[in-house]
Length: 249
Image: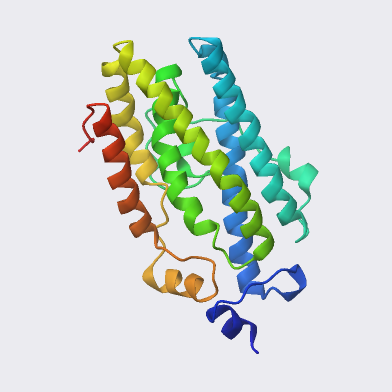
């Protein structure tokens, strides 16, 4: 059977030698975006660990840094099967580099790597980091649902292992917001929410209908970025409502 027809009928691939060129290019882009975002995200949280108000919070931040770095390593190992130089890759980009806080780059990517645009913005303190982690964590939960169904089996297996740990990062953020609310940090939380909401929203794919259909046909996408964003908006609004917080306009 023709490989593209096989994939369109729900087939999966498990070996780099069987992967068509166009499929390979899109798969590598998908993996690079994940790896670069995890490494950049971990670098940002590494700078915030000692801002934690207590030992428990600092352990939570350190855990996020450790596990995001581990997740990047796991997916990078899959990229290595396609010839990526794993050791050189990690040191090839300035993961801790950030733009000015007031920069507004929309969904555009850095010239240096494939991180989501969100990870080009700096964190300004503990409350800001917790709010970003909550909103982006809820987005990652939606994105990983789709990514874990990818038709390249070795990657799908890794992502299914990663998903519950990423979900736990979101839970840690919820616990962090709950504590901050008890400490009367509402104004800071609202400021962080207003800042990060549009930047997280911009992290969802804006692929054209034609490109999405092409990716879906070979099992590299199942749900469009627009659908994922709507699901995230509903979930994030519900979580904010639990704390008596309004959704930014």
